[in-house]
Length: 280
Image 1 (cartoon, rainbow, N blue to C red):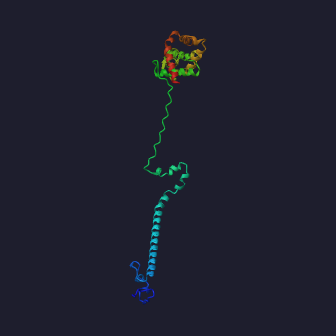
Image 2: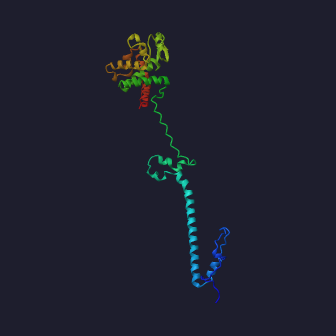
């Protein structure tokens, strides 16, 4: 029977099994040692046991290697994920914020390439409708402003439209709707005026005379005051509402030409209507 080097064999002190392996691991051969080969050549049970042990060692080595790779991969993932967590420390609690800060924290809002939605510009407020009536009936702007002063003053006095037409027609005849100062009264020229007349001391839109008790010079140069004086006197004329326009005007003015007021009635009506329409 051949020598199979069983476990009962005796070896000499110089055999490899009695010496520690001082060979560095880096140069250590990866082949199975001579002792292991001898055992593998031994009886079948011994070979099976050794083979099982070898497989077990290799399995443990593979498991250890797999665990090492898994740990390395986990370390790599943690290393990559850490900056992301530092970049958004408030991401977990952001859903509880219902205020405007939520939009502020949004990555999209912080992106310089994302332009904010254009805001709608507020529309300019419409300009208030002008209450200055455009000139009508052949009047210029200065005449129209004076006519408007007469109408507005009469409205404040609650005078009817008929009284407004009479007043405008009277001013058309007396001053052609210009505010006159008097060359006889230099004082009147210290107030705003558009023309200078020489009919005694007559001044203003209605050519009222201070010497006749209509008022002070400065008062009569004010179109609103002069209108109040005229309409107050008209309202004292009995039945003026049923009179012809020229008769009602003459009852107040006592003019040397009483019929001249009638020629201005239709133009005065047009001017009054234009002023009333502009004020609506």
